[in-house]
Image (cartoon, rainbow, N blue to C red; front, side):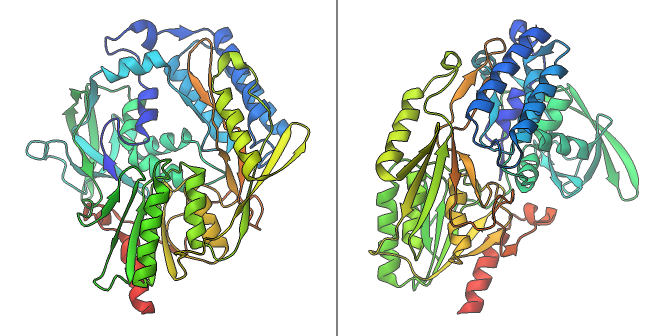
Length: 487
């Protein structure tokens, strides 16, 4: 976990929700769009989603979503800025139960933000459970009035935990998973309370000192970004890194009986070569325990996830996908139809295809490798940041009983997700871009139906505030404990 402006995932939302002002191009930041213009954008978004989105009918029927959009369009009775429209739309899209669906800021808005100095607080804050704690001062020499561990009750007169709830209301998720909302609401907390308070020049903190309440008036720091505050240990210097493949690994003992492999993301580059070398070493060394770290792995290459699965699964299985369309509708507002057609062609070549009307279904075989296949114990580290392709690997390992899972519920559902190709529809008036998935991925190994839940750990891990401060890795500690107990 690293707190740094414009680097945390949730910062994308933070800057997309910026307030009016800052002396930058007022026509972009302060311009209000009339209800008619907003409704036109909303109708285009609605039509694209209802035509393309494969989530329709998964957790709710079509009528539910039609009513949802109709109510949203009817609610647009006031003129709104781009910021206001985007927040309102994100709260709508959250109800689609799809973490791959989102609304992005306009290109012009983004350009301005890169050059804009913002008012940042002089204290790092972190919500844990129902409390908001002070982590540290921005300047550890001068910003020392609020001590580490101090509980903040209000910020500028507003309950400190309310900003946490606001953040969760605009985070799109798969199914009904709350863990991702909690995690990224936690990591992006400073962004949410600054957004809601419109980046004030002064922050007034109400905080607890034993049984009494005190107040600190703290001037903001205007800057392009702020220094990092990491809640994780420094990267292990002994890790062997495949940078392009985004895979790091190392053996944890002299006998090479336990290996740690961190799949940072499912990269599209040189992953085959990396896996080949790693699994060859596991085979040659007779490695008995493999720890696979999928925490904060947001997904990526589907092919990559297949390859990793083939080294780990013991029996042949399948993975299905389908799309409701043969080409993008409303092409006036989107690009990339060629890539969509190429993807369909790829599935047609490498999978079994069946069609009903405009819906094409593809079934892909996942056949385990014989050479350098890993047959021993697997421990998988997961959290709310484990999403998309990482949940495909996780679901197949979980449902076949192939691995032990440690951590928190994943951000992607056990049954699958909506992804593969996600075109952006650029709305004509606000110029915001709505991302709409075109394929539904189905984890065929799942027999529980559409649960709306993520992959649940066998050993759930809960961090206290002190655990964060001490930069403990409780998931790794548990993995090593289990390995020791089983030897």
